[in-house]
Length: 265
Image 1 (cartoon, rainbow, N blue to C red):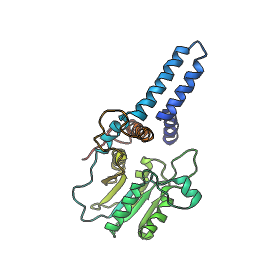
Image 2: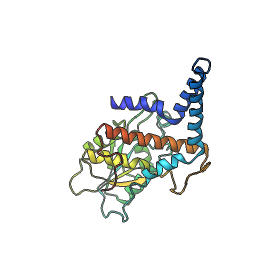
Image 3: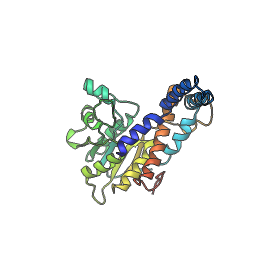
Image 4: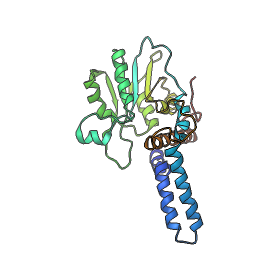
């Protein structure tokens, strides 16, 4: 139920969809007695789009998440396994074409392949099924073997988890498959902005991991201003920031993490 409610809620609350809904509602109310309400809704939609597309508000919201966890200062002497979370492949395209096309989160899999080459004895656990309600696509765990094979990683080293639909299920199912033992070192590879929620959930299911953030979306020096990035990227950054903060609040409210913003021990 949590999965379906979260997807439905996010459809309505993500900035672009919310702006469109407000504009449509405002247009509909403009011809009724509630025209003042309609004008207010239209103005709110325009303000939302201006803030998200033309200002640096998205980067300012996302940067604290990206700065929360840093990679270890020194490379671990030994790594028993690498967990890479899904979200880096174009699922619909790969389902249709049978390739391994990457999206903006593809750094997760590139870095996982680099780590696999650096630690040849480490297992590589790919966690990622199909987390959409309406779109057909191939789960990342189903696509990953083709990419890793092309990059020279032995398929026998892979542990594939293709049931998960969200980060909580990533953590839960990854722990079941990895069966981590005391004293083992497992790296967790995911986007830097996604790391706080991911680490919080992995801790909650009893899977001790070393954060290995990748896929940074902010430089940390954007500051407050207009047109610090192109509008499409700014809107995407704002959308990711809103989604991640809502996810943190929702998981805390559901009792799945013990604080809104998990941090280093």
